[in-house]
Image 1 (cartoon, rainbow, N blue to C red):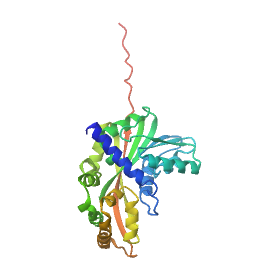
Image 2 (image 1 turned 120 degrees about the vertical axis):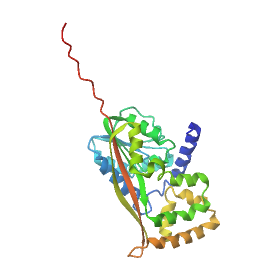
Image 3 (image 1 turned 90 degrees about the horizontal axis):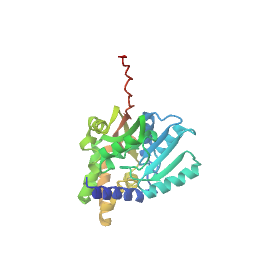
Image 4 (image 1 turned 90 degrees about the vertical axis):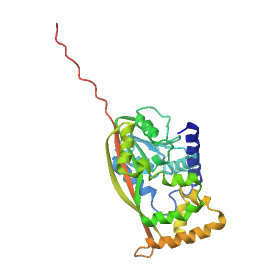
Length: 292
């Protein structure tokens, strides 16, 4: 991708998350937090480790990472959205955390010292970036030999969810239609594709596990509040004000396919957790030469 185009795309993504910084993962519907917690458990963050949380947002992975590495470890949270960093920095201060620092930087090309982290995580981040292979190579460089990277990406989801999201389709410009599928096509369409991405970047001993993350809405308005609170806000913003009521009504009809036994609406998303390691460089064995 052209560098100027990549920079514009990164800026658009950062602007979206700046707009949702105050509501992101804060509307009483567990979603990003549980996914990040499973990722942290999968990479087995340990006391004393130095960790990089790439695309830290409002701290979904930051908090469990800080707890896992303890007082002897350190976590650096990185995000390009200044609003996200500002809000999370306030929460770090409120929690009195002294082993966490936050930086505004591009996740696709972080300007940090080589081999300065034992572990890096990127929860639902990689598919937003304009050049995922380049980002993975950059992240590999930041790890010590033997260090590991854990990422989460999306697998399949309920057909009802696909139909629900289609209420926005008539209003989305091409760039948003493309962004909506960026996390589920190409290499992100399968475990093998994601693992090959990591392998091509230089990671080894790659493994993948899965979890099913569900989300439950009491009613269509509950869904609207949630969808407005994160990246899908861009879809609502693309709908003219006079059509938003009709979109919500269409969503209510489609949510009926997800009604559960309690009368609420439950949707399921498969989440892929992939871990890879930076190879430990093997020094050549010393050669013992026979004397002449």
